[in-house]
Image (cartoon, rainbow, N blue to C red; front, side, top):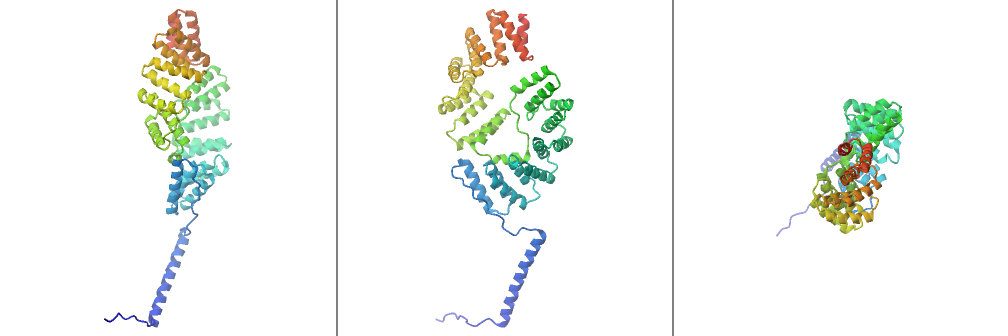
Length: 445
């Protein structure tokens, strides 16, 4: 059978000429595309490679997130979003320098996106305030309508000695959003520093009921009123300040978006605790359930679960969580305190007393143990014991109004009327709004 013939002849001059022509056209096209890219500012270089981040020894959740973010950035090296996410992840992992480099690359790739200089500014604020403020200002220039970013810039300026600029930004926020409580409080502090005490008082008064500013506003009111010479009013605000929970973080769109990358144990538990303080129990418990998957043997997670459930009056599930906590941390005073609350909520007074007595041995100076022992003894009709426990509670915390009211009532019931009146007067002096103490005192007088 014949085989197919294979030509060994050379290309003709015409064929060589056509091939050369096609080659020249291809080169010309490539050069034209490069020229267009240069004119339009298209970045032709591939950019820097993602940094090498050592993840050995990191918490598992943190290591997984960093490795995934690095892989995403390698897969999309010209994606500003990938670089920005990497910067956010490394920021929360406390890799400061590579985080800053990632934010810079994200900003280079997308100069119109304000998130990246903004987050870079927050990253640098504790270590290089001037560089940080410049980046926060650049972000605001790109998105001047974002009042949360303007407030954050003003707050940073106020904290670093640029009060005049901060005051102008606070005023600008309030022109756009007149009830922006954090800006009201920031401007109130600025007015106080200028000696304009009446204006500071009026501004702070508008912040007293806001969960983002209530505690700070009470402290400022106490300070301003003391400076104005109104000592009784100042003392009242100071007492209320002591009883208030920490102010909830102020809303901040870009920072809140980046918070999802805080996956280390400490940050997640702090976030859960903050959610409980804000009475956002469902979110707190969901966050704790997620954390428990990564840290199944952690002792703090079931404590926070029990604390949140107690505040929801879900005393049975709270007891279960707190017993898990105490199995892992048997000498935990706060665990015993919260377990006692769960038992009291279920009216299991004898069991609560046993737990509280352990708590007193662990922390004899904790008023809560003594006060709850008094409460349990009252419900068991052990009134003399209850009086002793309430006395101990007041010895540890003379300002605790509920213990004073309960002690005054028990003393009156026992016939110790003079001491009952004295205790109730002292309670009312510290808390004039205690209607129960006032009613009891009026009945005795």
